[in-house]
Length: 130
Image 1 (cartoon, rainbow, N blue to C red):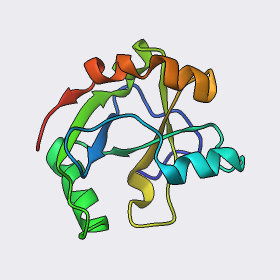
Image 2: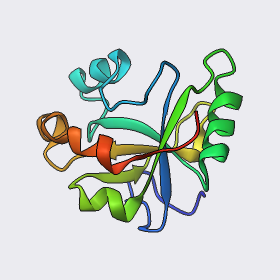
Image 3: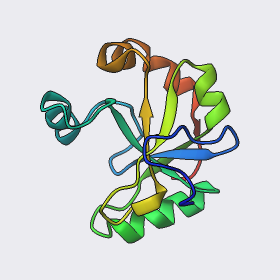
Image 4: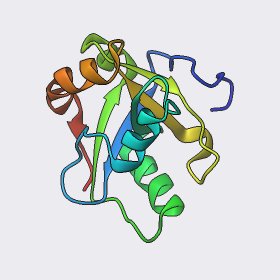
């Protein structure tokens, strides 16, 4: 997993997963992301996703990293299918427990483009485990 540079687009064949700890997954910016965007620290702006080979693997990575916040649902998409919706996904390793499995879902038009188009993501991501 660590052959990519931070900020590089993930390969088309990569699978990414959006995890929710509270019912169905969504694509809203959380308070921490909004704060970082406001301070210019989350550039390009986006939401966290996990790079893994399967929904089960993504849930395992999440639950190991955040044992007090277990995954309730997971959505899956391939990077090529994600790009077809107008979004992109970049390698964004975290300093925390997700490490090299962390990626960021972004839109070329930033926050406005993300918010205007995030409805496309709900139909594009496949709800799998949870």
